[in-house]
Image 1 (cartoon, rainbow, N blue to C red):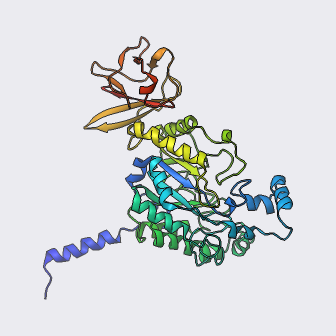
Image 2 (cartoon, one colour):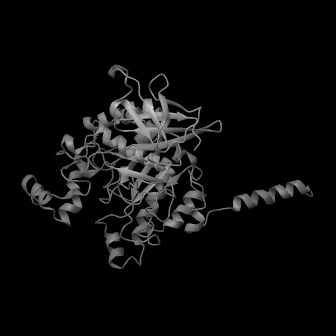
Length: 457
């Protein structure tokens, strides 16, 4: 039976659409639009948890510091408290996770105001927090917790919250024999990548369907060794998350701040100015370690004011803020870290309007006011500008040099009812007079957000 013309054309059109696949090269891969949910989210949490959480006296690089760098404090610690034949692998059974309650974690992350979570699946130590078939007796199901740490949190996050679930994966492994062999060959062979990295990356994507694949451990070899573009082409074309997944830029020692999805560049990347590409600042809560550190003092942790300063500056400059959390070996989140998360969530409950789903304004900071950052939002065709300041102005008077006012300009403060009075400043901009606000009516004490409408710039 002869097909009608419309049916033939429909088949041709569908074939063309289906044939539009991303090719395994950066030009093609970077033509894919970044899924909009990521830019709207603004705030994420990185969860750094592994065998290093057992000794917990240095950083997550404990093994490397002990065996390769031979850091004196680490070597002395091991000599003093462990027998001579003790190996790093002997720490793994002590990663007990007996108090790990993923439902509680999910509820805390929601209370913190996070819109996405990135859980570490594997660090350079190679230990896998899920039952990887390619890490026999070096994964959380075979040794230690005897649990699928990744899968349990994935279910809790998706069943109890609206948070996007992402996964961190470290490409290299310090002491894996196949990696060391490839390294000795100048990375001209890919035994480690083909037998370990690619199977595990495909496994975590197919198994947990992450919204983020956050790559790391890229610094010793280029993207060709890591087979990066081929993996990303599969991720964007065929994987179960092809329409929603986002990735970062750590796919080879030649890709950071150059190729990928959003840019992380270096740890704690904080440019302080608007970037051409969507970016993210990843930062520890403990200044000296991403993993839990038992010897950390209160002063080693970011204060809530410092944390908010990084957050606000990052969002103003078009980035997302990824704050690190380091659980203990028993699966609890240290109280001081929980306190910071809840403080951040309380601030966002009042001021989230100035953070979530905002966009960079024409200016990021002010020409007169110090320690003040702008964000903006377009509602019904009109621009709302938020001026977020981290120091209360002297004499309750704030002078802004950037805004161009109009007779219809209004100023309010998030969390406070009523308009603030203002007048044009003699040197340009505006002079805002704050009312006397009783301390018990102050929306918060660490940072504040003015909402300004009716500007002409």
